[in-house]
Amino acid sequence: MDYPTLKHLKTSEFEDAARGYQAASDMASSAKDAIEQRIAVKMRQSLDGAAVTAAVEQLQKLAENFHYSQVECGVISTSLRALAADLQAAKKKLDAAVADAEAEKFTVENDGSVTYPAGGEKQDGKTPHGGTARGTTDKTAQGVNRQAAGFDPNPNYARAQAYADRIAAALKEATETDEKWAPKLRKLKADDDLTVSAKDWADVQKDTRSALKGAEHYLDDIKAPPKGNDPESNAKWWNGLSDDEKAAYVSMHPASVGALDGLPADVRDEANRAVLSEKQGQYQTQLDAILAREPAKYSYSGVHGARRVNTQWKEWNEEKERVAGRVHGMQAIQDRFDRTGERGLPEAYLLGFDPDGRGNGKVILANGNPDTADHTAIYVPGTTTDISTIGDDVGETPSDLHRSEYLWGESSKMAPGEKVSTITWMDYDAPDTIPEATSDSYARRGAPGLHEFLEGSRTAHEYATGSAGHTTVMGHSYGSTLIGDTAKISVKGGTSLPMDDVMVAGSPGMQAAKASDLNIDPKHMWAMGGNWDDWGVRKGGDLVGLGGDGNIPTDPEFGGNIMKSDAGSHGAFWDQGSTSLRNQAAVVTGKYDQVVHD
Image 1: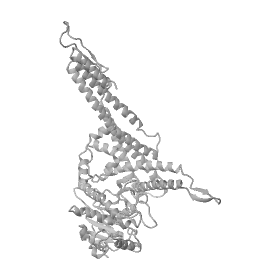
Image 2 (image 1 turned 45 degrees about the vertical axis):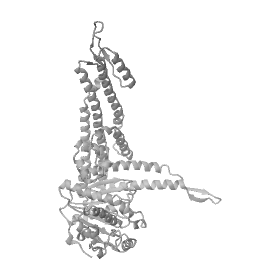
Image 3 (image 1 turned 90 degrees about the vertical axis):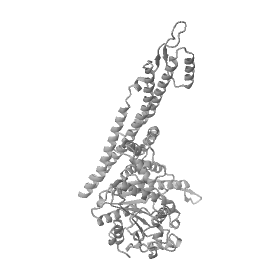
Image 4 (image 1 turned 180 degrees about the vertical axis):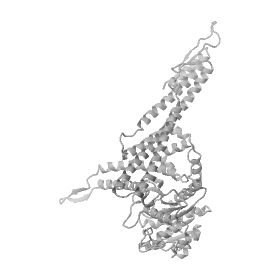
């Protein structure tokens, strides 16, 4: 970059462009929300049949286009702000050097050199003549110039050379900034079609990483999130940022922002949806490549051509199943977004997402906004929970996502006019097999994460409404064991679990003999059991020591409320129209007088 260009550069023009792209991002976000949360919902409520199904599918594609525009425009906006900040730093150095030179009546030429007047003591009756100093950033050349200036009888030479070197350094910095950002910004463009493909979303990830490498200095000037993941500190940090700083952090660090407990649900949702879409593109592209290189499954050997499965194919199949499972699980999350409005379902909020988190994947998905809900239920699933199956119904047994939806529907009916939010919390390494579920180690490792989320949920609600609201944590099977270990964290800290009610179904034990051992008020401890295999799960947990002193929550000795249940199996507590589901809803909404006790 030459001297006249940098001298007359207006970095405000880049900042104006950044604001324009951010406005475009915000408008795209609003359009996406309008389609998903209002237009498609109204169509489902008022129309039915093949025509409306097709129309809604087209709307979903349009919403994805808007989402893509939202994310990309956010990246462009932050990139332009970072470019402006880098150029402004160089321009400030240039302006300061020029001002200092002109204050001494030196002249800065159009090539950045500095002309200085005659000066110094007369020699042979003559004042040493003036001249022009040309700046350099080369260390060797600078040393030679300083030496020459030291021998020159005109003292103006040394000062002019220093100014010229400062100008050269500023120009070099601006040139390097231009060379760094020009190719990055040129790459930030979409295909010239109306289809947002998996490749497009995978490219968004690359665009973000590329922009992040360039925006490091700009982002360094923004206060970083506090260490330790304390929800209260996270909330204070977020509320201390300007709108521009918030937008920059979401666009450049969506995964980090989406994982911060204590931040508003809508902020975490926006960040995590960007991660979801990018990961969907990445994993789908990866799966397509895997499928394209399938090796031969069998090889034949021996006289009779005995067939055996190739080791190479086994390795290929394991990789395929793993990646396909991730793709399947991410589609289940997207399907929940697309179901908004069906059976009255409210908008969904993705409060946490990492396809490889904790080994089984991380999914925290809410029905309705928990920050403003009158009643919030946090459902913790049990053994074999995995992102690849989180949305799958098995026979007549509803999936973890559907269980949370059914609980929302029943609770909303029980508390008309009140806001309800139900959350599926899957952010721990759940046991993959029944033998593994006999160990408390999985619950012990997962407890800190659940505790932080519960604290964060309460913090976000208090910041949004000024009150904590009414919250229930509900554990199914091994999920109840995890809740027990989570309660122990609060006990060690001299407090109670940050919940109003604790409810468990099919619990094999909570690692305590009594509810009071976990500092849970027995009046607000609720348990239910089922028939057939559920009895085996509960008694089996008792036998292997997941309870305490031979007690599990459905035993009277545990000290809580035992609710009536008509669940015919371990996964049937959420059957629609069932007593077990109505009892859960009564607890969730605080309608304790409507609970049917066993």
